Image (tube, rainbow, N blue to C red):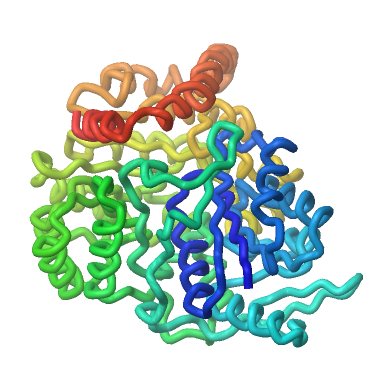
Length: 511
């Protein structure tokens, strides 16, 4: 079969749809991948010209697949609506948003894939080839007129090493750049690949889609977390390193790579150091950081690590149901700081949570001030992803009255937009958002530490809570800056040579 797979992700290192492509190629199908990569300004959607170019590539396809996140769902539905008017061909809607919100996706596509799609896509193509019914294929929702068949999910893939490596045969790929759909080039990866070494997360925090996945597959798995073996990971890394010589590093994007047992990390690091010989990044969480693990990772070539703090101790425990204490954060910070000459550390926190009290934000800021420096602070404003426990709670309790209140149409970093949308603790959320950037003993980004202490004076907080005018004025200025960053600076950065981007990233994270 001739199959077109379309990704609406904003960066073309989309491992999910690339793995689906590899599974289909194993079955003998001809697959083309199209990355409709628009900016992270989610108010932007595809023009008629862009969609017409897409339709030309989709001509003569036997099957079309499309994936999206909640933030890119409007873009995906626009593509589906456009193609359905032009082609009488099955279109299957998959990805995270289709899994969490199949009721929304089935409005646009007659076939929706819920959950892991590898087995479903194989069964679907076999049925279509033999002209057999697809109505009872597990993981698929099928619409026939006014009737919707909601098939259950199949057993999860317990041994993820059985999956083929993600498809990076870029000669079969296309990408949207500056309104033009063209052949994919190696430099479109910007010298990096986001690489998952496993599937699942045991924490299932209430703000995260993993909480939904964990419920979806109850009783249909051996365990929540499924790791690729170190040998499989190294095989994939070496394949990509040889195939794409411009790669500068690998960005391991497991929710928490440091959760792996020490035996796995040791084997991975030994193999990576011996065979890959390239820098890499990864993610961790405070509870699973140990000196032994960090020493191994740094010695193997890890130059950057992102650590999720998310909220104050009370918010993590009572709102996010994330089992983590301030003591965990400070203990991890002390270990990571031992390697500050070789390892750049970024801490992630979540701002603009309407369930927070003023004292929660103050407690979080005070915790950030105690963490050993230097580090980079990333402020991600809360998005209510459809289907998550926090989203359901917010809808039930009236915090989300209309769809835009969920904020998934906004970028995490649209600071002023999130603060103005939620209008809760506006002054303190502004202070926290302005702290983003490189943290030293004397400053947080552009904010001197002494200024933060000044702004957190109890009387000053009370005054600014009662009189919002100075906060609103500051947000107006911040909004202009954020628009310039998203619509001018980021597109300019993307068009720069890879060598400059590498230099820029080193300066940004190592200053």
